[in-house]
Length: 378
Image (cartoon, rainbow, N blue to C red; front, side, top):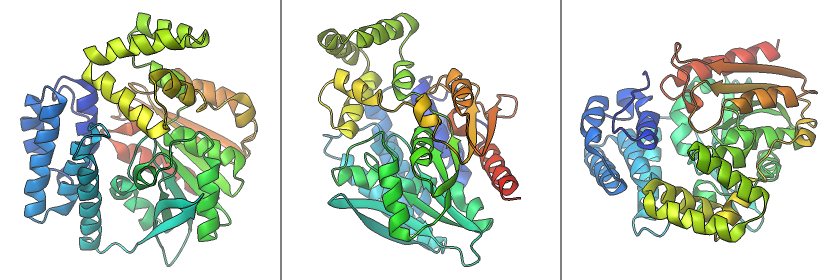
């Protein structure tokens, strides 16, 4: 389904709506959402709209639709909101009701990990062509990716999805977001006894998976879906030009007090900015905006990390990605010098893949990944 612009007139809200719309009527009543969501003007209305939809769908046994509606209701809630956790639970519960209704063959595993547990799901394939390891990004739930991955199961792959530090249930278990993603990746591979795999990182996972592949040599091929070369640059790119340059300059000079005062002012003026800061501090376990951004500076595919990459690499990007600057796509191409092979694709607006993670036409990316996986096995 093509990306629909200006549903609410607020770019961030419109993108999140389109994340659900790409799955079509199986995930949501497209006509109803496009029509009624156009009245949303703030985050309170957003929460009320999606909660009501979730309750309606759940009552009628439309579990996949309920799952995505509750996920959207949960998305912009701050961690201290009294319904944050219940929305998460309702979303995940309904995803699994939908999976069972679809008769999907899978198992849930809570993997022992540094004294806590890491959430994972495995979809086994009897005629296994290979193992596909999948992680999301910044604050994702693995359940929401399952419908997009069914094609890989049809192609013969056993699929393992996991939530590492800072994601989904693993975050709720107390493990905060980290840059050295080889740590949870290695734990998952050890747990399942995987000797080699292809790894796909979705959204911020485009950084996480490439970082993991640089250090974990059981990852024989890696896909950045889409690329993310530098987390700090990505998360400061959301600001208007002059403010972006000011923030970056002040960080380079270590002006912590000024940065925290500046962001305090911005958060009072912009509810979305306030949510970004609160969510970011929560998942990273930091207590000030400055410390949050300092943590993101660790999410950097530096030259020494890229020089460790000796597997097959596929980099994907959208030409109008509003999260990740397009120059990161080209920077990463130039940094990767020792990969077994390097392929890259920038999707265009003409083909409908210009958005972040090809929201609007994610089948383009899925087809590209499968074609690439087949080629590197030849």
